[in-house]
Image (tube, rainbow, N blue to C red):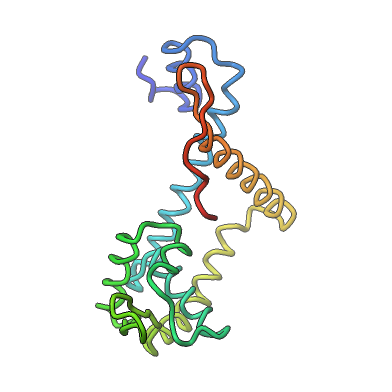
Length: 191
């Protein structure tokens, strides 16, 4: 029988048992990983689809939102791309690509740093502010609708559990087993 002819969860378990033996002790871990991964992709796809008519992506929206929030709390002079990279937790190359797109759409502008010509200062434009004022309330309603199946308490529990899972994964990244020896490796990524 082809694995996709039955319940996917059952098929995955059968495939893993056939390939690796009895993994009953590990099934809850594998199920958790699969479900977190699936939930992320469903949520990410839904958000990207919702933002498409506004010519936005989730990453662009986060960047614009962060620029606006920083502007409102006293960083009106803008932010460096490196600060945006840390906030987005993505590489400088990814930030550079995002900024190019946002600049093409005239939602941000770049100016030279006043004391270091190698650096640029990124600020949100009036057009970017107007876009966010239009999109964000609708987007928040959409986000709220996607979470309607969870009570406030369940959302808080899920956040706590996901934070614990993230910390556990970051801790695991610090050590790896090489030929049975535990070695210190790379530090955890910045939150």
